[in-house]
Each structure stands twice: as C-alpha cells, then as structure tokens.
Amino acid sequence: MNKKISILIVDDEDSVRDSLYNWFIEDGYHVECAENAKVALFKIESAFFDIILVDIKMPGMDGMELLRRIKSLKNESIIIIMTAFAAVDTAVQALKDGAYDYITKPFDPDDLSHLIRNATKQISLAHENEILKDRIVKLENVEDIIGNSAAMKKVLHQVESVSQSNSSVIISGESGTGKELIAKAIHSNSLRKYFPLVSVHCGALTESLLESELFGHEKGAFTGAMYNRKGRFEMADNGTIFLDEIATVSTKMQVELLRVLETKTFVRVGGNKEISSDFRVICATNRNLKQMVEEGSFREDLYYRLNVVNINVPPLRERIDDIPLLTAYFIKKYCVSMNKPPIPIDASAIKRLEEFDFPGNIRELENMIERAIVIGNGKKITMKDLPLEKSTIHSSVESLYELEKIHIIQILNKYDWNISSSARALQVDRVTLYNKIKKYDLKSTDKK
Amino acid sequence: MNFRKITLVTFGNFEIDFLQKLVIKINAEFFINIQIKEGYFDISDFYDPGRRQYDANKLLYYFDNKYATDDSKTICLINVDLFIPIFTYIFGQAFLGGRSGIASIYRLSNERYGMEADPDILSERIAKEIIHELGHTFGLIHCHTPDCVMRSGTYVEDIDQKNISFCSNCREILLL
Image (cartoon, rainbow over all chains, first blue to last red; front, side, top):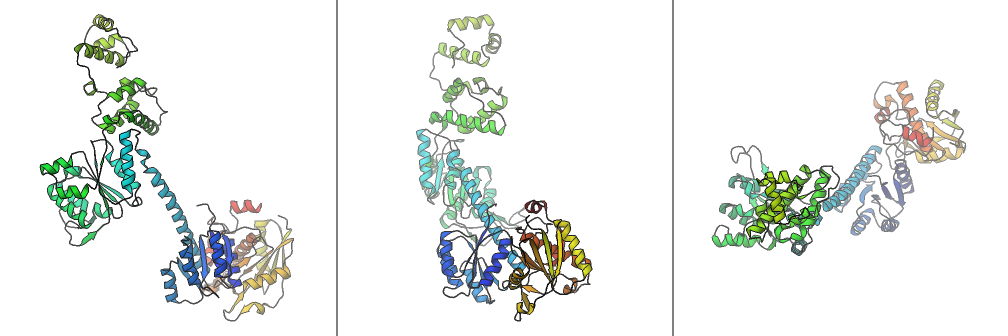
C-alpha cells in the first residue's frame, strides 16, 4: 500500500497534540490535530483519516461520545482511545463501542509504535481485501458465460433475478452445457459471493463416501477416519453448496438431504453434536427429475424442496447463433494459454460447426477447438483440423446421389483437393474419382 | 545543504576524549565542520517533579531560541532523563526540517540496565542518536531500512541493531 496513512489526534492538551504530531510526522504519516470533539467531527466529515487517536477526558463532548458519533457516521477509521486513567471498565466500553484499542498515557514509545504498526497493517489488509474482492467479482463474472442467442439471454435473465434471493435452484440441461458455470454466476452475483461456493459431484461418490463428504465425520467414525473432518455443508456456511448430478443420489441420501435442507442442521458421521450451517443449495442434473419422481426413483418432497427455481440450460444445437461467439472465445482462450498468436478460423469451418450436432455440447466444442489449435498449422483453423464425425452432421439428404456427392466433397476438402490422397481415402482409383468429380460437377470452391 | 556547520552544545560533564570521538563519527557521515560548545542554563526549569524527568519539548524550544542559528544545525547534548507528555521517556527529539535537536545520554549507558559500563558502546549509541536527530533537522523522516540510522528506535537494543550511517535512500535525500 503506497498511500500515506493519515492520523487525526484529538486531545485538549496542546503538549500532547504537539508531542504526538511531532512523533508521527517523524514517522512519515500525514497528521492533523483537533483540540476538541467538535473540531474533530468537522475534520472527520470533510476528510477521511485512517487512524483517529481520541483522548477520553475532554471538556464538552468526551472521547467516548465522540467515538459513538464517529461510528454513527459509518466511518471506517481505526479509532484508538487514549486515557490517562487505566480504567478497565472504560476501556472495555470503548472496545464494545467499536474502538480498535486503547492506550494509557503516558505511553511507552514502543507500545505506541506497535499499536500504530498493527493498525496500519490492518488498514493495509482491509485495502488488500477490497482489491481482492473486486478481483473475485471480476473473475467470477457472468462474462464467462458466452451467448447472445435468445435462449441464453433468457437463462442469463433468470440468473440475474434468482441471484439476489436465497431460493434453491435446479439447473437442468444436457451434459456439457455449462450448468456449473451458471451455478457460479448465481453465487458470484448473490450476497453470499464473499463466502465459499462448495461443489460436490454426487455422481462421482458412493453412498457412504457422499454421506461423509457432505456431513463430515468424527475421528474413528469408520476405518480410515483418522481425523475429524468438516463436511461440505459445514464448509458452505454463509455460502452456496452446488450439488452436481443430484439425480444420482440414492434414496437413503435423498431422505438425509431433505432433512438437512429443511432444518439446516446435521450431525457428522460418527458424531452426536448437531451442527448448523447457513447455506444456499443449487443443484444440477442432466436427467428429467420430474419424470424420475413419477417413476418413483426421486423423492417428490425433495424435488419440490429443491425445485423452487428451475433454470434450463439449452443444448448447443438449440443455440446455433452462439457457436461463432463460443468458437472465438475458445480460440482466444487456448491461444493465450498456449502462448500463440490469435488464429483465425475458416468461414467454412464455422459453417460446419453450426451444422454439427454437438452431443457433448460446449465441452465438446471447447475440446474440438483446443485440439485444432494443438494439431493445426497455427495459421488458420480449417475443416480438416476439426474432428467432425459425419454421422452426427445434420443432414436432410436422403438420396444416395446427394450423399455420395457430399462425401466426395468432404474427402476432397479434407485432403486439400489432392486427387491421389483423396482417391486413396475413398478406396477408388484416380480415374474413378476424376469421373465422379466430372459427374457431380465438383469444384474446389464447393464446401460442405 | 545551505548550512555551514554542525554545532554540538553540551550541558554537563563530558570528557574531551569522548566528545572528540563523537565528532569523528558525526563527521564521517556529514563531512562538515563540527563545533563543540559548552552550554549553560538552569535546567531545573524543565524538571517535572511528578515524573521526575525533564520536559524535552520545553527544553528543545528554549534551546532553539537560545543556541540555534540559521547557518548551523545545532544539537543539545545532555545527560538527563527526557520525556514528552505523551511518552514515558525519549532518547532525543528534533524539529523536523528545523535548526536544532536534543539528545540525551541518560538512557544509553549500560549501567542504566544493570550491565558493566562500556564507553565504546555508549559513544556509538550517542553518536547514532545525534546523527538520527540531525537527520530529522535535515527533513528526514523515519526510515524502514533495517540498518539505517534513521530507523526509529525505542529501546537501546534497537539503537545497537542499526548502523551509524544513512542508507542509500536517506543519503540521496540529504544529497550527501
């Protein structure tokens, strides 16, 4: 922190003010003095002081009253009370009223140095904390959610409106649609943003492991439980817990979860003490929970407890408009991480991406772009860099004639219209390929 | 630097050898003519019977009026226990960017802490204290460099830990 620390000395005795003024000036602080509480309040209202040293005994308004007045102004200054009488009850009252510390006059010079050093350390930490909070907000911003399509705009609007509440949320959508990112966005826009967002991938854990993971365990609760361990619900106190793949949770755990969600209290595995935690629940699933309820594999009461707000994240194939934007985002992301200059992508490649089915959704697109940047020539991403399985390409083609034509174009494009290579890939001779090109009137500008 | 000399005004008995050693040490930092003068005034006016100490603020103002000149940085060397109203004791003080300062030998001797007298250590400590106060008169504030003479020291151990010289940053400010 480079800012000069400012100190206000409030004392009715000239000699005290002068002594402290000289002492602090020699330490390089910006120092101002006030001979009574009235002058002090005037100065405090017109300028911010990092530290305010206040004498308790002053004519008119005393130091304790001044302390209360300063606190009522929502002033963030560190207030140190000075007293000539080491009265413990007064000091305790001062601390209760919000003073940082108190010091008895006359001070040992070292005590004052320590006190001011600690206070400046706290100011510096508070300042650093503010900067880090700003950074967290920037890092976890909704900006990470890319999408201009109407479907995504609807999702973002829902995120915005649900963030400020404490309601449980179910985020549904196919695998790879970015459900966790939506959960992060809800958390980072909520009032709980400075507290943890704890994620649990329910599908990755067995029932007993999940129980211990969520509720924690006491030492000796089971073989291998060598220490007491906090559970995820406990860790998420004041924050948010994100339960991914909630549909995979067993019936027994569903009962446990319901109880925790209703009471916000739980007991660690092997323990007997009830622990309470204030958390918000966000769940994600790629299954149709309502259907599971109808089938009897998911508890109805838990479903209704969780499903206060439902956000459905559309699959990528339903937000084709976002593909160019997402592609550009991933190209930039991976070029930066691989320390490469930005690589353009062929328009035909973008068109093909837009036609692709993307069963793995955004995750698949991301992997595809990463692969293209790794194995490509580094100058341009073309169709041949993209592993687009033809079976998943949307096609309304039904005739054999069209299908053959499209397939030949694909292979020719893949091999940059090198006839020998393309013929070898198609397992025909070159003459046959030439005949097919002539038959379908193919040109190297044809893209499919 | 517009001033032409440093003047050391002593109050009380100081051996000439002791003072000459001090002059050499101070001169090694400032490379300037250092004068030693004997001062006389009744310091009982500055005695606080309640604290059984001498008020350094009052003493410094009096000293500045009576002994300081515009062409010199003047330091009062004294052997009494100094205080300022807010602190239990001080080793010395000076007008920041002013003409004068005060340094006391009283709390710098080993005997004060139940140890064997060591004139060399005492000479080193008081030289550091004088150079420190002179630094303030030149406008230097406390320095965070661990071994710089301008580092704030509230115990004799702090004084022992720092060097007798300015760090490069302080030296640059002083244009020495």
